[in-house]
Length: 601
Image 1 (cartoon, helix red, strand yellow):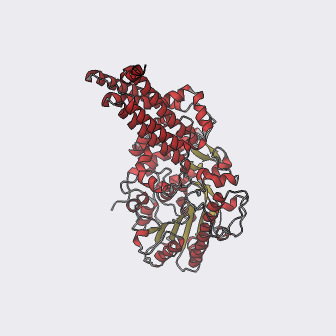
Image 2: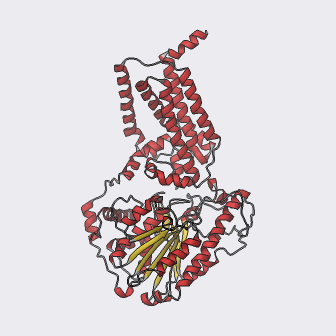
Image 3: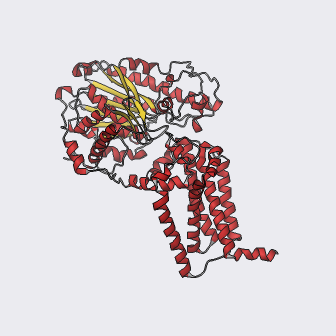
């Protein structure tokens, strides 16, 4: 009896069946991790849809058998595809945990930046991860010592491997890349779901990852959409005439993007012991102020940064000199520089800021004794302004680092910002430490502005946040405070994405521009912010900005990362036919401008 059981180790049918089960097991582990922060109810819901199970389990089975016929070793066939799948599934697990976004192939294009961001956070290694690793080890041991059959005959192995490749290609073309099938509701979440990460997770992990390969490749290769017409885009953009800034109206501009800057006094459930946002609120009363509906949460700083500098509605790649408002101002005689209180390699700012048109850009690497805090950042922003060549108008764009997450969850040095209420110690520490940094930032903003009030040179100051702060794994502090950040609701959408901006001018600038720079500026996407600055300065700007300003009258929030717009004041996933046509016309101009540099020489 024992001999018969042992003989099965060399039996091809037995090996085929066990390898199929091992491949299915690897797929089930990926489904478990694919459910991520949404929990076991989502995982159980997969089993109500045989199609989801099939589309997630088929790829690892095919991968295992392809390698089996190539290597002739069951343990190799199991281990390498399963390890590859485990790594991808773990990245998905942690990315949703930290960022709330699904993992797609195009994320590999920013793997260095992503790794640097992830290193800032504490990743929760729960039982799912340990079970996945244990499953891989057990599968390796089992396949190494039990599955002994080695397929023979080179011709048959080639035919078998080729057949698997053909089946895989057919399945990808007709099933995995089928948008109609993918967009059908298959499980768990509501059909009208605003959060792509949930839509993605509702399909498992392997299936949606494969489905998104085509769009990821298009993103990484800057592929053009099929509706793009270059000649039409050229004609439309050239129909707008770029205007120069009148010499008597060229004021200095200092712009600052603040890390994780958010006004939490908008949430009445918070009880402040100290008026941490007093300086901001005082400044808002004497400025044009409002909210930016940014595209990212807790990370993704360069999205709001580069959309402001370029006016693009979508973040893109930067490999060559790129049209931007920096280049426009430089062409108008401005000296352009800036400072980031972080490393020059992060988000490749050293190279990209040159492509965007900055004459000089400084990083923490340029200062021997600098630190990433606002005690260094704000005085140095002012110092650069004071040392400028006053014979030229001046544009400065600066990015802070203070208040970057993660925030200490184990202790708080002096809990003087908020009362704890019903929060856990961990969430209280995180939130209190975040607010202590914000209080310091607000005082330094006020100090910078006060230093510019009596400046005889006209200066406009633009300050805005890049995204909301991370406040604990799974956004624990938001949850415990009952702050709605569910993007499936209008309130939650704004709570999730809205950050403040102010546009302030000193008296000299107000006289020069004949504008008091006060009032409610409303809410809109970062791509419109520079246009709002130009409008307040009564500058027409380049033709592209004029086209963007026309679009803003109809659509003032464009969040393509999450598939949302705001048309005529109403959030929507689908634009009206007339506005959709206008938006696509503008997108053609945007794509054309992105690839046809206008400021050579």
